[in-house]
Length: 352
Figure 1: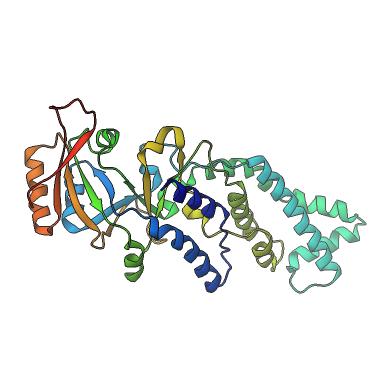
Figure 2: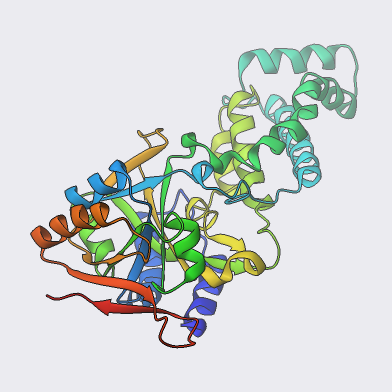
């Protein structure tokens, strides 16, 4: 599993899927990812749950609840590093190049240059200004715009943590015997855990037209550097608002390509020192029409078992047991064996 995760990290970091690529190119790239990923999805993945009416309803109705990253307890989950100074310099350079192209378009009488921009350039030429002076004049029109870049980029460091990102996430783990996980995510041992077999889930979700993927979390010692990705996105957004020329959007596709995979891998990095023991996998669901904090999707019959926490209340366990019986899934009890000196939590299959 460790070897697979290292290979997955290398593959995900070196795969570039241009947003303008053909469907054949995109399909091939995703096939390469799935060919490595799917054979290595564990047979059993677990989700720890507090007992409440929401988790009870999801369990009863065969749903998996997801939320955007801003709802997670760690305020730095899905936080990214962006070199704002570099993006400021790159955008300034790109804008001046674009303005230089405008001057060439006027000289060549290009039909693609907007009329008002061409008139402004001709006016400066009639005044006898040099090309360098004209570019500085034109550039000054955007000086406030350029100066705002650092503030705008500061906001982008956390923008993946809000509902407008359209990504909803569900967290799973490889172990059902983690005391840390029971304490932190299952209401201090008073909740329950659900076992899923997700080995075929990607195909199942595709068959019902849901954009759902499952990936292992990548644990690193430093924040991921997404300066290139965010810089390209920001430049594209900026120039779409500027009146440079009508073919600049085409040039942006060439000079500032957008990696389709970015909005998946950006959610997969976590602090190795703090979280590697969680052995987490993340389910990512994209729906551009959904900007709510929470969303529920069907479990596509991947649910296999329920585990009752050591301190779950009797009445709560009975309500869950009734639903488990109706679903025909296995039931387990998690406990600490006080007859031994073993620290480990034990798991016992209840009568089938």
